[in-house]
Image (cartoon, rainbow, N blue to C red; front, side, top):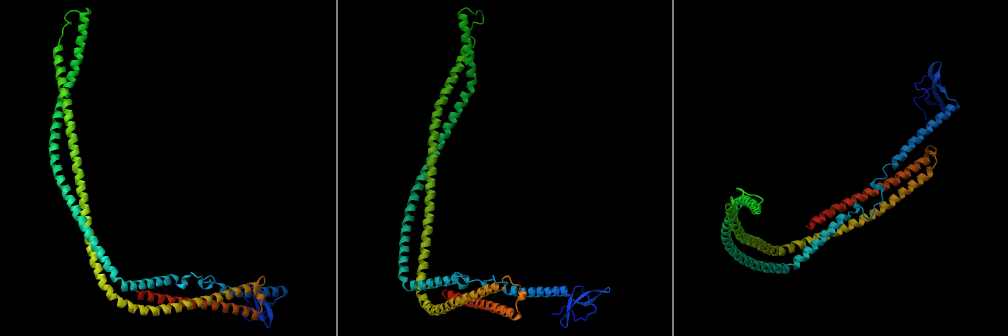
Length: 397
């Protein structure tokens, strides 16, 4: 094949090292007399020309081969597994579930009115039971509230007694506390006087220091303190007892209040349950009326769904057949790739004869096209099945 424009020996050229053909004669562009002109190629240059042509042919054929193999990792060139979304298994499962639910609804609608009446009777019985529980809870709360009122009145008296005992105890304690330091001083001073008297009695000390001084006055202070502390201790017992009684009263009032509140909560809960049960009874009675009306409507739908079931089954069978056809087309394509790889293994692409190469490429293109066509036919049928399944599911509603 010629490279560049047709040329004659000696005519000017532009690219040094470029090749051209003139009547099956290979020309090369090189410098002659300081100019680039076309010259006859020598043996080495002719070999370079042939190598260049082979490389270009190799490259162009590789581009063709790569374009046919490119993208063969896509969905259409993968075998369709049995659990593939292509088969719409989830949608078919949803359809089967919807159809089963519809049949169940139809069956229950035909024979469920008596069952619904039985449910109404059970709910009425439950309502009566809850009414009795409510009356019992209200009676218990009334009794607890009565006890609570008495306990609260008693608590007032206990609080008054506790406050009085507390005041008396604190007053007595204040007196004994105020005498304490005088009592300590008197004790210490009289102890010193007695010690001094012993020394006087044995003659170790004499004179004016051997007197009784404030001994009697101190003894009076000590006596007053002992009386005050005795009264304080006595009143402490009364204070403790009235406090215990008051604390017990508080505890009883708190317990009764908790019981009253708990019963109040139970009364509210039972009342709500009764209201809900009555509401459910009304709703169920409305359902019974509606069930009779629904039976005729459901029977009309049943005829439509039978037709949908037939069409879905036909599309599923077609889908399985197309999937098998795609599998065979894919196997043929993969086998053709293996054959081509074996044919070109270790052999440059430019060495293939033109007709041999065209057959090889044509066969590969044909098997690839079959895979693509079978896949998209499968995809179209899958889409049709999806649409029909959606319509069928909607028809059950």
